[in-house]
Length: 293
Ligand code: PXG
Image (tube, rainbow, N blue to C red):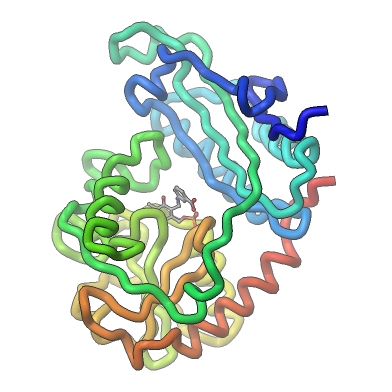
């Protein structure tokens, strides 16, 4: 028996080395498709319904009809985790427009390709969560909702990739993206929060950000823990003068930020509110979710 990971492609489980789609797929040719990044903790898929809903909303928005009911998609994800024996995992669901000709016209693509990849989760080093990270504002702006809505999780991630390149060129692990107007938007694959006098602030979804699922979980946990939470327009001035700052995302979970553009945030260490949210989030992810079995 092979120890190779199995990838779900259009209803079949295929060994990783043979998991392929056509070069004529418009996902490859044009970034025409949608995706989701999901995590499983302790044998349970975290926020599965929310991720599935977002995937289908992204697809609807680009007129891509996913040839699978939501329930079937969920079953396929759970099945893929099960055959790969994964209890803690990163799950990538991709739905591309499918094979077409060399023109843009999606009507030529008759069948979307659905791919579910499950793999071991690569955790960031613990040190990063204990010490916090330094981020920089990048010059590339978050694309405007009028051109390509950031709520649409499409295969076209160049906006974020360019921002990531800029941050890493500056020697920093993450970049802070602004809106066209210069307001704080989000990280390249994470949402941003600041804490001031034990109150949380995060940019509202209408600013042109991805409405992160981790962001929503954090908002709810914070409310439960008695921290008032506000979705408000934020400037860099607000961030520089925050008591605490952190990023949220499926991959990153909650990462403390201790320096932004050379300005030390608070006392330069992960703050008490951030640390308590990290702790609460870790417990929560172990408890809730859709069981793989
Ligand atoms: N903003 C953007 C632009 C994102 O792509 C988030 C925020 C956080 O959203 P969630 O729902 O994950 O809390 C994302 C997340 C990864 C990864 O490995 C995540 C994303 C894209 C690519 C990789 O965590 N999107």
